[in-house]
Image (cartoon, rainbow, N blue to C red; front, top):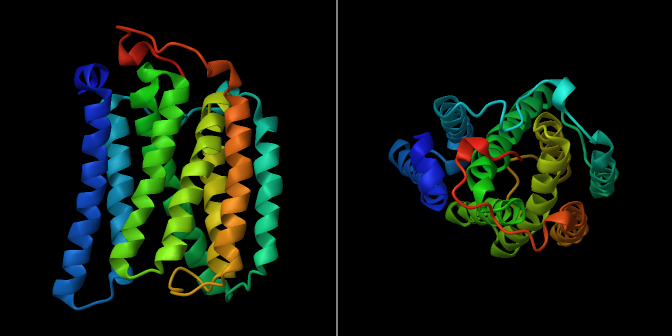
Length: 254
């Protein structure tokens, strides 16, 4: 598999995206056959995606190379501070915490979301695309991360809200991808991703909410514009850099 990824990183990336979409479509079909709301299968779909990410990382031998490493290999963690500060803005959404039992469940769900999305987009795909050049790899993985959120349309979510999700995820993905490269770890990104989702889910009525206030998507996009600028600033040294040619995927470091 490593040889294929090294030769055809874009084809591999497309295959992973098709696999993710197939999981969603199978989940929606199962929901219809079982006569249950699609949201009832959110957790099984996330578990399948997490297993897919873990399977790819194991098959390719990329756990450590994708940022699942020890603290001794981490660097420049102070670069995470602006992200932490911007997360505080999410508190303006006035989250209303559920009871203890629901908090525990929500923590598990958001950590699972953080793991499977970061492992796939800032782990597997960013690593696979690295031979294309770091800046290009970050941009492509961010765009794909945004596009995958279009699946919310399939379960009847508000198109305006979904559009804000897509745009916000693309912009935020640039910053998260840049931080993955600069900090040489994925662990803090998983935690921050989970914390961001936890705050938003509690602010908007939880993962079952179908309607949200107009100001929330607007605020989210605004924050993510700032994040995108920050991410591009972190990658400023990559502008104008040529992608390495004929370099085995295993030899590319991000």
